[in-house]
Length: 82
Image 1 (cartoon, rainbow, N blue to C red):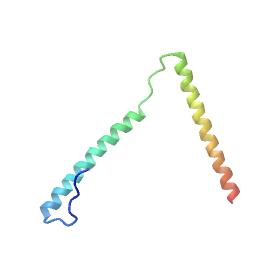
Image 2: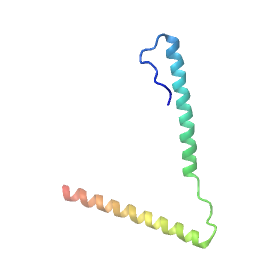
Image 3: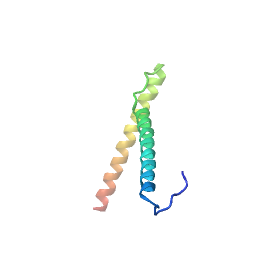
Image 4: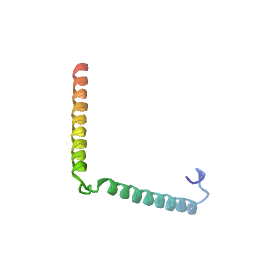
């Protein structure tokens, strides 16, 4: 983080300069977020072995089961309160 700037700028040129700094920070952060999002959403490489394919399938099944059980617990908790 940069050093804190004073809350009340001295002149319009300081406001303009600070605005440009903030916009540059926003652009940098946007590019980082976009790059990380692309890395997360890229498709998986094909499994290198049969065992790896089976492990991916097991992981997907476990994730689906976890989602269903969480949903079921939420439904039961909402029904018991209502």
